[in-house]
Length: 129
Image (cartoon, rainbow, N blue to C red; front, side, top):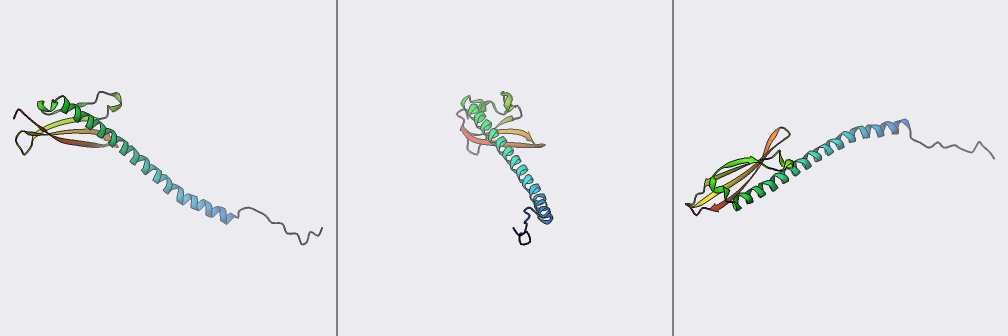
């Protein structure tokens, strides 16, 4: 066998290819991690808003069924331990038309050092007016 005509071929990456790959990873990875962080925050915000909306709907239904709106404004917290971060406020005011009341139920909570809120409003007929 003639070894002069036989070329050895080395497989692998050159130093330049490795440095280029590291540079690419160094540029892309921080941007990708920032994207993951933003998505996580948005998902958390969305979950808290949905939870607050559900609590507001439940409280509004309770106020209307028990006719608590007739006693005027009120506020409080939710009894369940998992909802201890949420507070509710009931406000009742006269509507433009006589005999109709506007009922507002607001749910507030603290998130990332800011007060967030959701308010639901409905109209009820006040037979006493």
